[in-house]
Length: 409
Image 1 (tube, rainbow, N blue to C red):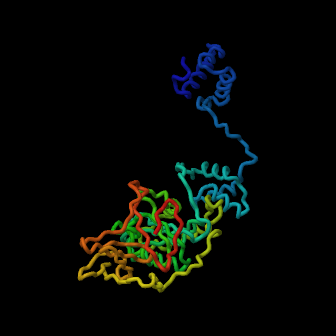
Image 2: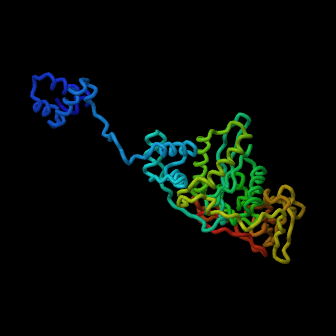
Image 3: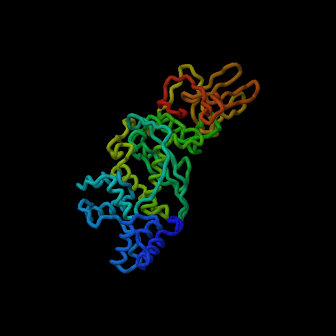
């Protein structure tokens, strides 16, 4: 009889039945079933002791007594913290150590496995990493999807410090609009100050293809605060990896706590998650420190009244109308809608008007050909080579953030 042709449980029972019949030699049966003689004697002995075939089956090799096993009180605390936070073994180890419960990470993980509290997640490694050396050198900002509610919808706006992973802003918006996002940013700036630069994707709130700099009304207001703007590559969320990773944690926290069903419940829920993330949750990328241990507010305060930009002496300075247009020779020329009612510099060159705002060349108006175009220099055709506008000379220079595989404004 081939040993692997039949179910193992059935083979064991067949062996015991034939061995107990007394008509066959045990050594011959063991050779036929492909097992050793000690194993055959073991199976027969198990049946003789219990007189039931079910006792012949494979038994657990788990020891009857484990003197070094973690105590039930500690196991209970591990389970309580897991259910309370939803965190993994590495983070739970930090919380337990603060309660003077010293357990290895592997032991905590085994406890969670025994209790059925571990779900397998496989994530690929990041292709490259960067981190600013000080807080407030760079903030990452992004919006997290849309949550349908019983009374509308909720959009979450997240703002994260690159160095410390500290969440400086976590806001619930009933609609994703520039006006509502700006109110959240102003609230954040008043609380933590102004960063040197901000990194964003090319979402419609802070990027548009209608001008070379991608200016929107919101991005212009950030520039006026002296904030350098950096934009990630198209279809490349890895550039904003820290805020994207926070969004994964945010989603897990919402599922663990229960996703609010009404908009009025969201601010309180997000405030609890923000406090837990910043002050209680250890962060692996910070060597299990909390973000609050590495963050401090910015020394640059928010300017309630923006100081007028100083163009070079002798410049022709004009103010755009409410549509972002410039009037010349009795005709209106479009410059940039995001710069409506702002002062720009006009330079006359070879029958053209070169319009700049602060440190940026914005548009070229050809009076002879009666045409205009955005000032853009093409660097290439790849996804990473999006257009970058020309820089204009200026008397006052805006804060420029360092480049890191991103475009800078």
